[in-house]
Image (cartoon, rainbow, N blue to C red; front, side, top):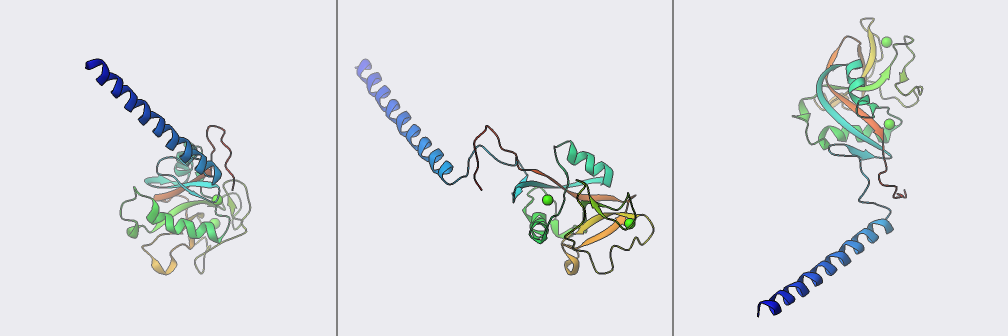
Length: 191
Ligand SMILES: [Ca+2]
Ligand SMILES: [Ca+2]
């Protein structure tokens, strides 16, 4: 009696395992056919857009401290190449799950400065400025130390997503890191 019960149990378990394996293979194949691999990603609380991963932090830091913080995570302050990327960053204020009250954020550091040469803005990766989205009248170096740049947050709806130059001695509560989308485990991902 016990032997036949155990035999039946083993048979059921074996069938369940086989079914599970079939489903797993099916899901993996479907994913690979679609060019999306479950083994790749930006990581927890990072958000993918067009080949990069982004994360917005609420931490009280100077521009240089914010840069170091991003770099410790294999990233740097965000480099904004075009309007689509800028639009995505506006959305990130609300996508970023761990942000406190995004609607109250005034500004966030981005990776643009004219520290090396006043009036010549350069991205932290060395690329010159091509696309820009300044607030009207900026950059104006208003107090002679405005050599870093911030994107305006949702708190100022009229300029939300536009950029302002700010003082290098400013400590911001918010900043945005960007890093290249990393593939894991060698599985090819088609675009
Ligand atoms: Ca970028
Ligand atoms: Ca300046």
